[in-house]
Length: 334
Image (tube, rainbow, N blue to C red; front, side, top):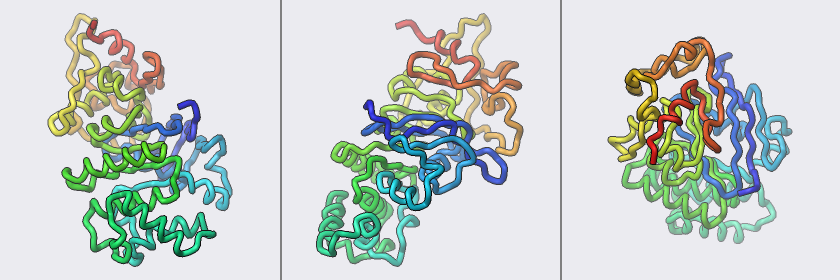
């Protein structure tokens, strides 16, 4: 856990002069899984693509083994990407409909290991297909002949054929039937244990993120608002948005977590968390103050004018909320 594979600092992305990712920073260690959660439109997929330079960053730094990715030459970036692979949300659209399964899985080998002869390449492809639960006979077939779950297995085989050190999973199970989601998540966990791959796991399904992750980062309107270990986050959320996410997910995912202010020491009663059915403000709105304030039942006057800084409230647990220390002090005494 001491080796930092990926170091992201103050990463920013703008689309049409609108900030969709703002000052995101984190480290990812070898073999670790970092979960990234947030509602749709929060910037999760943009972050994944910016790390791989599939979209352009407007500022910040992304270092892979200490080497800056954002300023790498195209040739060097191509070489660095060998160790970083991505699995996309829609498995069918991420596969070339005109390529057979075997050709799609073999393509990374053709690019990065051109010295392999045809027989060795086919052996690697069929071995990986079997490892993800598909027999070698599927190699001559095409993506449209398979279900969504099978296509995602093909996508996983293609991503893992190079034995990458980092696997970015961008909502890998959100488009699949519930009965298939568990199989894919278990497959990813097994492959991680077998190959020692680090994962950045992006999902809005808190149950899945809780199962696979060691640490979790919560993102809202392109900014990290809370980050800590999995157990600490689910036991003691310190940002109202995190608590609201838990409350919204509880009926579906059977996840229970206390609201951040269990018993405020203030004399007045604590206001309730505003439901997430309240829509987020558009990115075009001014970002003065806390971006979450219009949806937050805990907002105070400072929230309208001062953007809360991301601060370490307890060791290893950071949150961007003016009242985070109050929420920490309001924890039940064990």
